Length: 335
Image: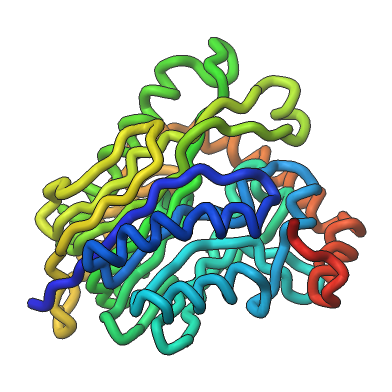
């Protein structure tokens, strides 16, 4: 087996302030690099911020934008592989794109397979992205937040013979509400953040790196959800988990920080086991490796209805198309 020094960076992000967020990450990247990390994972949507309104399109970028330039510069400066996801504009559309930059300036990209819940108002899912990156360090699968909570991620990991699994997250919860988001659902979300990487590592025999945002979550929400739910906070709990399912390093809910440890990659010649794909699939499309509280018909129906409304709104939005074109023309510069 080959070993790899990995790091998860748990940071706060401000909505739409791309340059500010990137600059904020510099000392954390330096800290991880100075501890010998070769692969550094930032949270999902870290440069963009988790803004759930049409204003998020103003923070859209291309692969020539500030986020990719920053990743390349920092990867070259510290001799590391560095990755995060941002709101990518292409054609008339927006995507949640994870980019990993190498020290030599090579860029590897994976797009989020689905736009869950209210996210479908602002970007579209890739649908069939293979979710695997081949780089100098090895073959890594990438599950961007909600993609980890559905059964098809199993085929990406086992079918593609991934050696390590990356989980960039932007996992948050709203304020407790007995009718719309009761305390038991918030507690289930906490458990999910802590147990999901352990379950993945134990099931597939691959090490897992999870990086989540932390701190307050402040954003409007689209109707009808916005009238029933108020935003609250991100759940943090970033972790590095060994291939045997041992939590090597972890952070709490609130604090920003860096965790670094050495993991053993799954062998590159691992033959694969189709049974692991079948065993990971749960009810209603959810993965059985996730929190059982979420794998219910009622919740699946509610989320499905919300996504249907969101996708319809996205398809019909002239503002979305205009915003994407402005980003690509250079007219929109993230603040």
